[in-house]
Image (tube, rainbow, N blue to C red; front, side):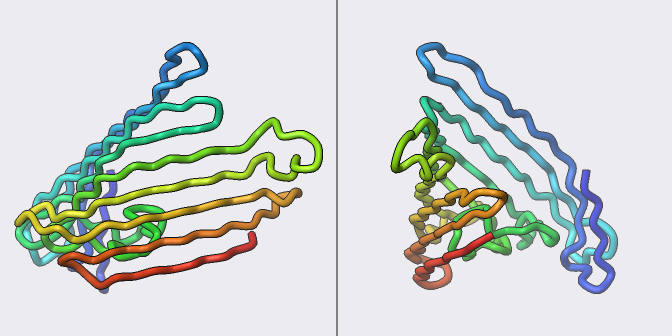
Length: 194
């Protein structure tokens, strides 16, 4: 349960109640079935001036094999009375694509159909042993509204993170959002050390 009453921004106040179930099941032969299912219901709360009830749903089944994981996902940030499911205190960058087009849920909601493929390198010996721990991620998203059947656009994302030893890492991100009926085309390259 999250009860958020923001006095200086009452339009962001809301109450959310929900739950998550996640786990994995050994399928044999080195294959593992991974699953995650989330549901929440959000309503107006505190001094929120608009009465609304919006649903949140996230389904993410996947299969892993020898460091490779593929997930087919669906995420819904619902809408009611012109208010989309809100997450005013969240770090939105890691959700719904790296291009940050949907840091705030549109008033007509958001549906995100996505594929996530990731591979973590391990067991490399010799000259290229520095690649152990390298994480490679590729994602593809199709975005639509919850209300009104609006095609927002699509996005392609790539991410890599390489441990450099003693808690230091380097990372690279590339994202390309192709707009249809929401925002405008957006392309980003991000490099980082941490």
